[in-house]
Image 1 (cartoon, rainbow, N blue to C red):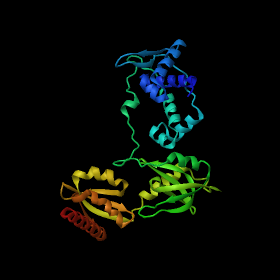
Image 2: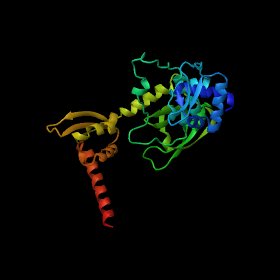
Image 3: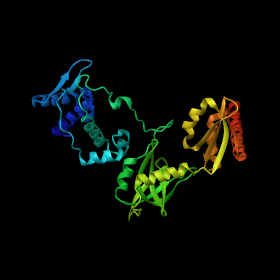
Image 4: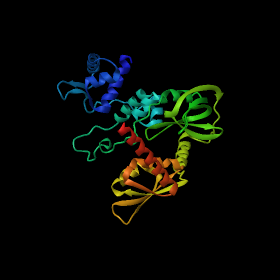
Length: 324
């Protein structure tokens, strides 16, 4: 970044953050602390009300009232805001963090300066916190930026993908709509044989852009299609499992089971609740093993038998290892 662009960007950053240290500015713009201090002198010499205070609580700041007209967003910044707001973590994965950061700062810089006691409301940023990551699981690494760039060419993709529960991957040609993020995980949404599907990027081994243009339905938008696919997955409850659960872990069960938890009812004992869980296949009851002795599967008999078999297998395996 050349000095003129950097000086304007510094003003945007200072107006957004009110006060920053020279070290923070140096890290953001990829220059030395000494360069930042020289830039501050240039701004001050240009009669811009920027000050630098030394000491533990010092920093670089714009004086109140030293507003800069930064209402106009660049095309890339506006596109970032329309797509993901100012979610810097998502922007980093998509390779557009720089545009997202400057867009966020331009928006923040439009906040009015507080004047004494004239405002009685706490800033929204102080009372609202948003975390898009999923519960109990780190975000899965995925080269979302590279895939997004390839999808934007508007051509078919040949993907090497391992389906859930399958030991090996296989290639297939797809017509991509785009990428979708939910609960900290990324998915490719594409049509296979005229049927929209979701592919977890964590199981996407590789892909290649083909010469043929993609064939998708113009009446389907990515966001609407993603919502439909997610809803379909959540409603696949062909198997309903009834179990008795320790009431003390009901809240934890609600978080873990999510939409699979269809009902929670009281029992004759205040120490337990009766729950109903919906699965699309019997083997999915393996999920309930994590509740260990805090749960007892009651019905259907096939689910109860599978849990008993799995528990016996785990017991034998761990006992054998402890004896060797």
